[in-house]
Length: 517
Image 1 (cartoon, rainbow, N blue to C red):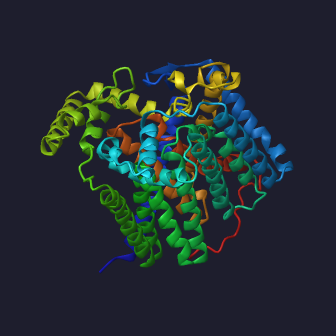
Image 2: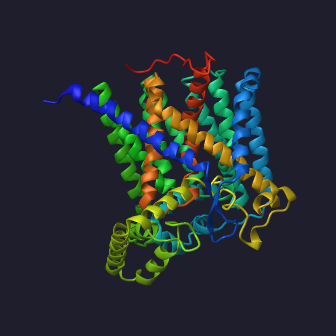
Image 3: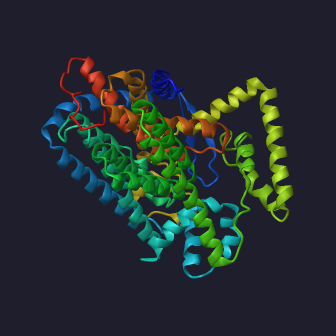
């Protein structure tokens, strides 16, 4: 017989463990940021280095932190709606400025996906024998871009759509938190301010890759999930699952988000002793598996090509454990592509080589604990402590074809004064986000609303899961910017807790919500 009390105790322990683990990762990141940051050169090759102990960074942290605290009085005087509208208009205007005054040029995977989508829209399926055969997980993103390009086949147009998606992500994050806090609550104003201040979200519209639509679908999914829990309407539950599956389709790494939501449903079932979360979890899992298989089957049917033999995952794992040469450890170094090209005509040999190389590099790492500790430390630091998260690198740099037309953009994209100022500002901002998130993690019992705690639990699982995933898998700073963006509500909660502890009462009171008992 199942012991209900033991299951409830396990659920409480699991919550405690996750929030403390979140506090550990973000606290370690905040502490490390005081002494070091990663820097990716503004050239195509992604050469990387660590910058140690900069007094400019400390001054930036002091200034940004002070401004954040003293802005409370100013924020009280402006309505949240007006603040959000002003920042959205500024973001939209600057986004259009960057799009219009930069050449319509894409690079790396973003270019391959874009041109693959363009070709397939014209019934040319050659990309399914090349890049998309190697990376069939990109077919979801290709499908998404095909829909946009069927309206206007233009790089500038699709960047404009990505700009709207970015503002849409801010909107759904705002609407999600508004379910728990009054619109004029200081929490909502700080949330608005920090969301728009996290400008890697804006600069990544130039890359036209999966992270921007994925975070849009994910924030919309979280909003629908919260509405489902509050209103008990299955339409919201279904929408939440569909949107989460779409996020995972356009960005493979968001499969971690699907796993995180499945865990949330499981813990909810244990906490509420209900079968309904199991049904919702089963629906999500079936939709996710079906959607992935369906996309591949669709492209096989229209092209007549077999797409079941992509690049083995062992290649990415082996590369993620190798030195990066001029790049950071565990970053892309070309191993996966060169090995695939060598053995692509012999699928069995291709798999065998991947397994062999993975075993060799794992054995080496286990046999050299000191160098492996240094390797994984550098890999982790380079993944989470690059202030821009490669949002500038992903834009118009690295090629004569990708030039900008104004002094402002040249200063940003060619390492000028504006770029250096942006790095200092973002290092301070991300340090604050990490530090406040760690504080919330340690103080998670202060979160009284059970639904808000579940939302924070999902974000924590997504963040922790991605940390663990990139310990082995190929890593890049650009893979993690949306995860840090999602920490902002948790960080703002920590800020409000700190201000409450400092004697500023009334900043924490949560809006009464008809949450399930």
